[in-house]
Length: 161
Image 1 (cartoon, rainbow, N blue to C red):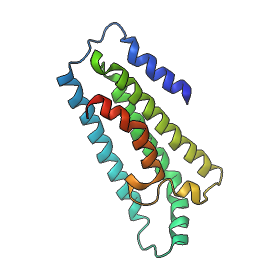
Image 2: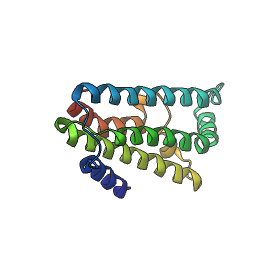
Image 3: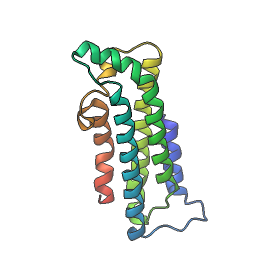
Image 4: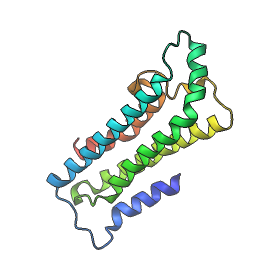
């Protein structure tokens, strides 16, 4: 996945010769719109799958249900993250935020790698507590949520969000 991060960095700095950098006033609303779309789609996906987890009364039942849900959930969630990353990659950031933008692309690539790792572990029958804990609980408190916040938080602050 490091190669994806390298490609994202190259794309962010290459400029392609034909794209005109956005102004800060143009750039930030585009980034915000991409983020809001990702949030809406992620929440809808989470709600759809949480319906399948209804009526669970024990931790063991929750683990068993997650083992059923994750193989379908992960590819769809990965797709949402991939589309957000592609949207960010399509932007030509202003010079003032070019490095932070490239770092944000790398953060999304790392996040996608975390999802890919979890999907591979689930696919290979590793549905133990450590894999399930990536996704259980409030999104901001899940291991995956915390890790993404740590990865992307600094970049968002650097971008002024």
